[in-house]
View (tube, rainbow, N blue to C red):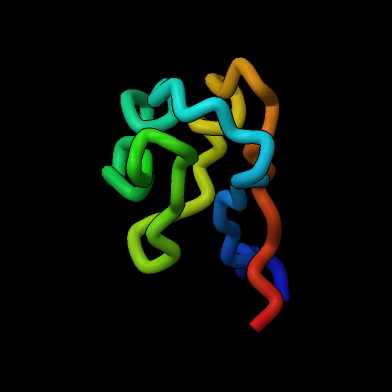
Length: 69
């Protein structure tokens, strides 16, 4: 069916995240938080997969993926 978009979400490779907060600042849905100053986490219920965080991430540890389930 044409016109149906698959859901996408941001995924952060937490072990490589530098917790700089750049993704937090650009997220229009406020779906990302830095956890204990160690790494960023995505709230999957809020994330719309726009990709702004992935483009802004200086460590390139954020990936936008299609939701499979």
